[in-house]
Amino acid sequence: MSEKKTYIDLFAGCGGLSLGLYNSGLWKGLFAIEKSPDAFETFNHNLIENNNHFDWPNWLPKSNHDINTIIKDYPNELKSLRGKIDMVAGGPPCQGFSTAGKRNENDLRNKLIKSYINFIRQVQPKVIFFENVKGFTQKFDKNKIKGKVYSEYVKKALEYTPKDEKYLGYKVEGRLVDFSEYGVPQKRTRFILVGIRKDIANNTKPTDFFDSIRSEREKFLVNKGIGLTNSLEDAISDLLRINETTSPDTPSFKTGFYNKTKSKYQKLLKGNYSQKFLIVTDLQNTVPLQ
Image (cartoon, rainbow, N blue to C red; front, top):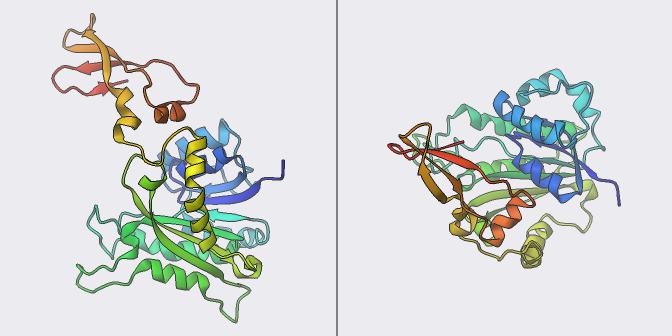
């Protein structure tokens, strides 16, 4: 087997993106940056301690970090990674851009876009994989001052090659992708941006990534044993309670079990894990408790 590619996960959360890279068997993490101590604790437990998915560098404490602190405190260490990192993955927080929220252009978290670009300039990975919400591609028309389209700002900033710096810039492509067309049981459209460093791009174009996932999606999903589209029932119908009865210890509660795995989608997600979960339900509030 060929040597695994190396990546860094930015704004890593509890590890969803890194989990996908781990499951692919093709990638090995160097380190991850996540500000929330709770999210990083989950990340550390699942991907660092239990699965040994990261070759964490000695110069960086293995804990939660703010990206701006990393850039400020470890500039030489970041620059020393040039030529060694295959990919930087992840996208800054989406709350300020999401149409599901207030879409506030002055949200302080929006400034992390500049931090992301600064990090890329320091490390200069071969490839960039960036993800954010659909609202990242839209102007802030409802604010007092009509804002810029941040997706275009990021694209131009990554493509730009300044003359006074040792930075070559990237060939960049960004598109909206509806993940319900790729097996996800939810209409979930996300902005995906892919960048390839100009000095290694040659005949490879960022558009090749989008063409490839489109052409390979059916083969991939069939190999996983599921269809191109999956319903909410396919995903969570096994959460319906069965064999409910009044709890012998607390008469105001009911006990029971989650249903058996029904769909191919559920079997894929659970793998070989078949343990039954006992649930206790408050008769008044009907809230499942573990």
